[in-house]
Image (tube, rainbow, N blue to C red; front, top):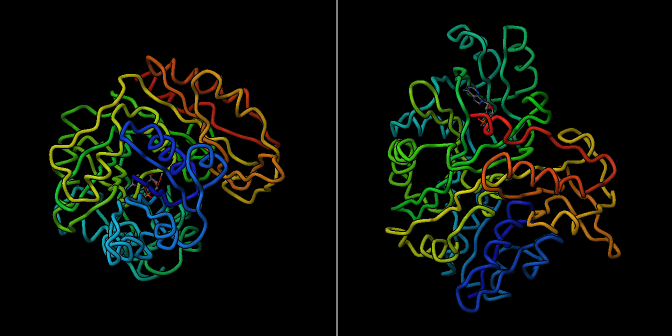
Amino acid sequence: MKILVIGSGGREHALCWKLAQSKQAGIEVFANPGNPGMAKVATCVPGEPLAAAEAVGADLTVVGPEAPLVAGVVDAFRARGRKIVGPTASAARLEGSKIFAKNFFVQSGIPTARYETVDDASHARLALGRFGYPVVLKADGLAAGKGVIIAQNAEEAEAALGTLKGPMVIEEFLRGEEVSFIALCDGKDAVPLAATQDHKAVFDGDRGPNTGGMGAYSAANILSDADTRMVMERVIYPTVQAMDFSGFLYAGLMMTADGPKVLEFNVRLGDPETQPLMHRMKSDFVPALLAAAEGRLAGQTLEWNPGPSVCVVLASAGYPGAYETGKEITGVEAAEAHGAVVFQAGTRMLHGRLETSGGRVLGVTASGLDLPAAIAASYEAVGKIAFNGMHYRQDIAAKGAVR
Ligand code: AMP
Ligand code: GLY
């Protein structure tokens, strides 16, 4: 069976790495367009996704990033009778528009923060009077993690209105622990993946601007079985049923004193959450993915290793702001010598030399018997890697280790 993974980041490298270990007979993994890390475990194919799938004769395609989903890649594949894991463009609006998502939560009875939608800054000023501080302002469209501002007071809210243009959501600030909850769905049924926690802020102690994610971990104690069932019943199943949702549904949750509340939906796997998830997944992933694409997920389960997995992201100097590329990367093989895996995100190979090509460059991922051991294994591997300007958080999963 030929499996094609669409994308070129750390999430897609982790997927390819996992799929390449499948025990199913005759699995061949392809990546479109892929990256140097993915090239170690898959055959990279350039071009448009559908053309790439047809060129290699892909039996199953899995989509990584949101952009092709929002652009309708799943609709195009299905129109040609090709099996693909992902939501239709219509369902992908759950990620593409915050306003669409919030209205959907309320219509479907999905718990979320109290909110109002406004068309512009002057309406926003009126609405702000109906909320206390801190308050959260969210731009409507896809904003690569930069469209959300938490204002502590009226001055900060006014400054936010200078940055966020057009329609937006204003919502109540929620307190609690954030959890990334991802389920694989087939239009009727859904199977939860293990819970993960992301680290969005660029600096230790959750300080500094938000990024796409500076590290993530997966551990059995992030969410109890009872909470997992509650999230499936209150959040995931209502969405799958209302939208015939297929693909990965990622609920960014705040676990509040009143139970889980949805901060946002993504219609794909998380990045970097996928890196520790793939490292920790015990099951062969191919049967579940195929079942999802064929609408027969009912009865499927995914097994996880008991030990946690931790992924530390190594970023370019300046990220999430402007950064330079083209810095030589050394130490990847040494980092991988003791069981850690270095998932590549912003890398390229030039004249046989591995160098940086993006903001988030590598995701160094390792497991351990307990969280302190997994953290130690990841940071030991991180210590072998170097590139000019490399920076990373020192406290990935640290809060989980003391819980
Ligand atoms: P979002 O893109 O909606 O997930 O927001 C990005 C980040 O902003 C989240 O990961 C939270 O850390 C924070 N955030 C968003 N909405 C809220 C809220 N209502 N209360 C508290 N924090 C929030
Ligand atoms: N790590 C957050 C996301 O994938 O959206």
